[in-house]
Image 1 (cartoon, rainbow, N blue to C red):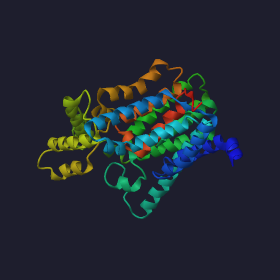
Image 2 (cartoon, rainbow, N blue to C red):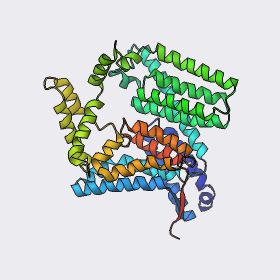
Image 3 (spheres, helix red, strand yellow):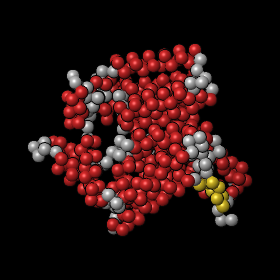
Image 4 (cartoon, rainbow, N blue to C red):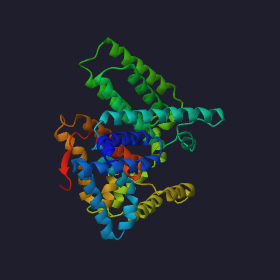
Length: 399
């Protein structure tokens, strides 16, 4: 057994992580179970090779976690905050494991085909529901939760990250199957009318065209035209798009309706209002933050709107902005550490080319979502950022 592990421990670790990453889009529970064999191989590896690969980004994330927990300890909420941060901790463990892999391309393939499997499965599920007579409406409303297997913004973001990888493959060598998967991902994202997902896809496509601009030939122009036409048809023929964007007869009416329905207007207003009195060190724990924010939401809604008040009371919405969330619980120190993750690649853009693109996508997503509040978000951050961080450092372990 010892000889077998010495020979194959790295391969077992690589394939364990590949299976884990494949299931990240598909299941909230399986990745946690799959962390066990990957973790055991990781432990064997570091004791066998007597070294461990660490990275600057992982250390910064650990420092951020430490600051959050120290602030919670000072406030007397350490245990509850530790429980709240368990998703982030699992994401950091995945980050650490990903830095040990010897076959990054295997991880890329696993993730892309995991997302493709999710798209196909969810499409079949939607068709099945439609055949049962369920109304297919992706503008807004409870039917969305019945039709989509995971939360819409995250489902769309998965397709964006998959296409980032696919476009990178295409730049390394054109293949029709890569284009086909990319088209499927884009069309699905636009079909479910995920607003940020659509915007990020447009940004990603422009980035890809810019990258290949010196290599563009007639066939590439034709392919871009075909893809643009397909996406354009999906957008123009999408009956839910107008409702999704609350488009009215003029801009002023559109804005008023959008503001009335978009929860982030109230949430961000309350976030900044809470920061007025706690801008230096935040409120120091989520147990302290959630009731403050919920009380603020209620105060912003007209007293007669009982249904809306109860909705905000029951949901207890988070800040819907990861930067505001960290600022509110870890103050300026936590915010500076989080911000540094996105500033570092700007200082050395040539060294951090892929990382810069990945972090731009995460930055824009984190402006409207708290990814560290969800298991999926934490695992995505750990796996994708860990995969594309260009540097890692081998440190001696018990030598």
